[in-house]
Image (cartoon, rainbow, N blue to C red):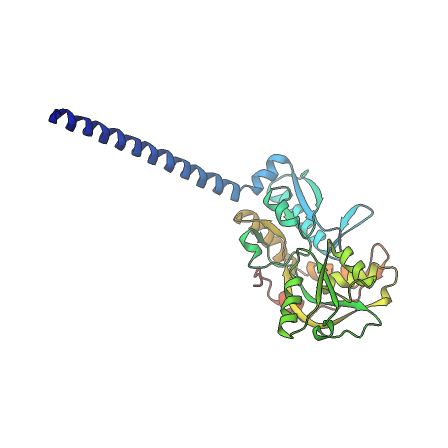
Length: 315
């Protein structure tokens, strides 16, 4: 074996290996940089997307009266009014007076996937601003605080979580209320049969028909469903406050510029009295479709947020 030849072959192999490693490292770094760039752009592109498309898409709920619901095909409610105010502010900020506003119905199960897919630009409904959800989406300054309680039939003897032992309890699939039912059951060592409605109307129908003894949900949603039922006096809201949960406009995650506009709009509405006006309009005045007045006083949780607006999420 030629000694010099052997050394020459090893040298060539080493050089080739070094070149391949360097090339691989360069390509890898380029791909990594490209990925970061795409992520950064997509995380801050909502305003550009709206400007380019000439429209903003608002996600809304179909049966979350009086926060976000539909009457004769038209989305309306406390939160829908807030999102419309946000959309009007976007028209000014983007200098697009003819910006088109479109609406897309979402459910408890589809609202976050629709946001992640870019099919909606904001969601104004009954979405709790939670730390867990903040891992996927962002929230504006909170515009409402709900208190989770139970709706039962007027002749029901249920008053506390303990009274649910051995009974069927319904809540809406994909909502945070399920957590509080289970926590209450575990804390009081009771055994309830947890069942789920596909949306709020379905959950209410299960309670109204007797398939479930109680419907655990946000008090504003319960009040709205009771008011628009054919026999509102046949139901009542009972039990302790299981949780106080803030609602905020749900936004794409990581878009600071877009969130700043939403925060400004909601905070100003709190400060200039517009939010109090909306509360009176939707909770203390006759509302469509049956012109029923919910007569809901502002809760302690709502008044606390009113005094110090913030975008904090619950754990």
